[in-house]
Length: 187
Image (cartoon, rainbow, N blue to C red):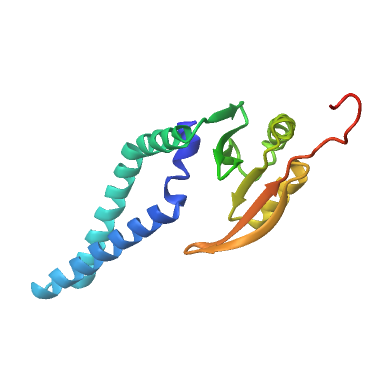
């Protein structure tokens, strides 16, 4: 799971803002320093960019397992955290705002459809449990194509709206619990 989760380290809005701010500061600082020394600002900027990329790669590989573990700890701290795993995909489920949030869904091969059977199997189980506990299931994605795939693979899950963030549009998906009709066997 750590290998799959590493790709999401730079996907969060806060991490992108930090990296972008750091990159701009380093490059601007190196150009300013070059101007003070009457040196070639392009050469200084090139060295700064190369150093920043090297630093980012090392920091990413060193800190990403820690960040993943801290994220999982934070989700579990709220109540519980359940992970579903097989050889094709992963899925985490945790409580959030009175619903069960599906997060950190990763496929071994992205865009090939290999995770669809996994999603269908896990979602069928989760939907039955959510109905039994009368709780909604929520999910978010930034990719419209994924929102359509999730709707097709997970019966009852629908896009209920969008939310704009600093880094683009976020599609909000939700499945309300299905209440079985009242009858002699369901009382």
